[in-house]
Length: 153
Image 1 (cartoon, rainbow, N blue to C red):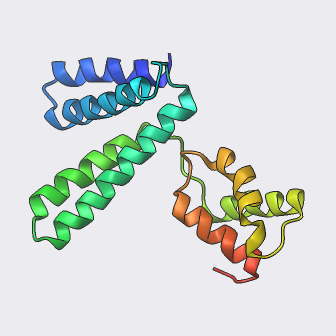
Image 2 (image 1 turned 60 degrees about the horizontal axis):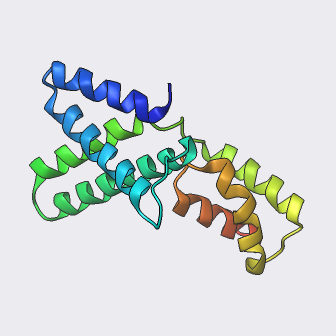
């Protein structure tokens, strides 16, 4: 069963158990997936990696919203966004540790022979598919930059 089907079956279960947080969150995620499928010139079905990308984006939105609400003095809304974000991450693959990310980066640098900041694009092109949904893009980008400039993060 694909990830989209799992989400739909979990939605049915959440509605039956009257879990408002889960049902509302899954509805929003499924809507985002559907919007992604119908955007562009022709409608299409998303692949598992594309669905994981949508889920990652939705989880990141919730984290950012939670921070914004917390800074704005709305702890009730911040908590709700935080819970939604945590719930979405349960559908994502296990996150890679910093050491695992550095190993993937080192292998990509060895493979491309990239040196200095100019080689960042080459390295990211190899690293990105391997870490999709398993690590924050900003963190990976910073680690690649540090590896190429010889800095230790």
